[in-house]
Length: 257
DNA sequence: ATGGCTTTAAAATAAAGA
Image (cartoon, rainbow, N blue to C red; front, side, top):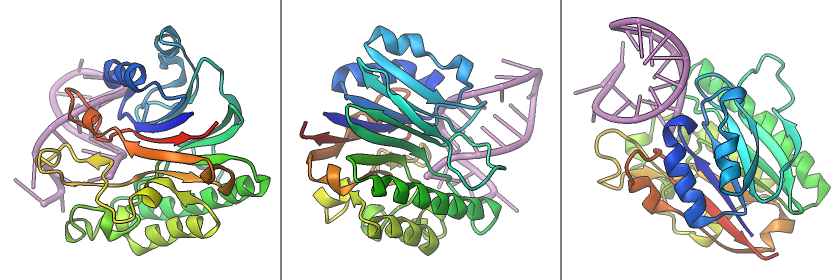
């Protein structure tokens, strides 16, 4: 089976591209971030037409996550993270599909830093770690994937100096990410590309795509039970170059059944 | 460059993104 993640930057503007990607690559499960729409406007019928069932957790204007599955309804486990009743952002959705626990995340960006947005990012990462430790304790095949908004190491960015002040690569962001790995989660793309140089995001500005000025912030973290089943993984880079593309490219993992 | 694009919401600008 193939499990993919795609920050689509607006489901309304991206729908033709998204349906095209689903039909061309046919992932078993597709986790979406930044759907940027209220629940009542989620185009579930468009996905049903091409054979996908869906659950979603939206909000007005920004954020929002969804999980699509080929031919089966994802069985929702939870939406949102514990630990902050004030947090009304739609950034977390967890479900079971085909015997795999799947958490779709849209981690806060955190810019500008320092500041309240960066503090929110770090708090959110603590709450995520708590939930991921609970999932790990289940000792089941599990993957937590999505837009982590963290550049894990310098090898994951086209120019470390150019991004030095960005929230995505501050030491606190990186430390929090590496604590997840320390808990036993495996970064699939990093495992298969240890020298780096793999990007999942290219800014719309300054010709970043044309110059290949990107970085890697979309990640799939696997539990030991799922890491054992990893066959291959990759980035659907060509989809970033199409008309009206998202600024992210899809990432995917292929697993033994 | 307190942002060179892009999206959303909504009716001209503003917020958010990374």
